[in-house]
Length: 203
Image (cartoon, rainbow, N blue to C red; front, top):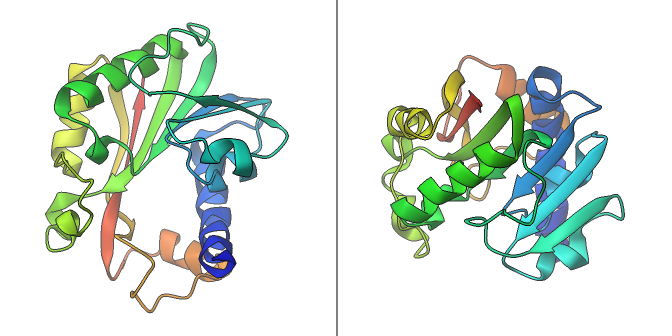
């Protein structure tokens, strides 16, 4: 089971570096929702790092520099309001009902500083409709258009929308997971197999 996790960490090394260079100051306070195995929050450079997930797995995989919370993302009232510079989530909202996703955005907005950023990376139904429901836990459809509109409805302005950012899954794409190749992919105007989008909003 270690090889898939190693591949995941290598991909996230490049993705995190890309995001850090554009949206995440190194002195930021960062909260990741649905952190799972923590490949992003462990590798991002930040002053304060928080990870939240309903699964206890985060307590096993989070680095010692990461403060963990095992709880739902729909209620962040135990976290300080107006504290975080960045709220990040990858492949999260599609697993929630629309009301749960809306509550999560409202909670994220509450814990962000004025002008703080929310960064969302997740499947784009426009380009991944064939595989989207291969994951039985996907319950909500989002496209790059609808996700941006959803953020606006919950009080965010849109900073950037990248309809094609990463492949829907690195499994079976034949794209090597070496960080330098992932970096080339992220910077390329041509993105074969792309099915994940990136949407960045501001409070």
